[in-house]
Image (cartoon, rainbow, N blue to C red; front, side, top):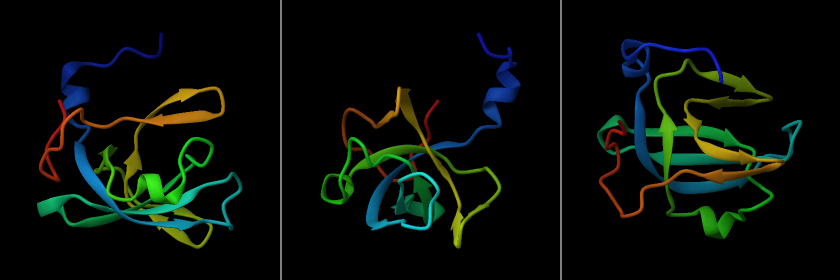
Length: 111
């Protein structure tokens, strides 16, 4: 098990639902990845780099809802600024995206 955190620690992580509205190849990334543009409703549009190319193609990602951490600091990846962290289950080299079972409003909180 990883390091134990308190409930207060968990409440600091802002998990939100967003819809992917644009997907681009990211050839400059060290590992195969896509550049995602995600609509988080009232929180606005954020960009993320995601190493999810083994199970997903650009067409299947477009308009898909995902779960992301939206309150991390921005991170420079090559010439791209990632503004949120898209979450997925890691299964070897594959990442399976986390998403709501039913469509929800963009920006909805996850808790």
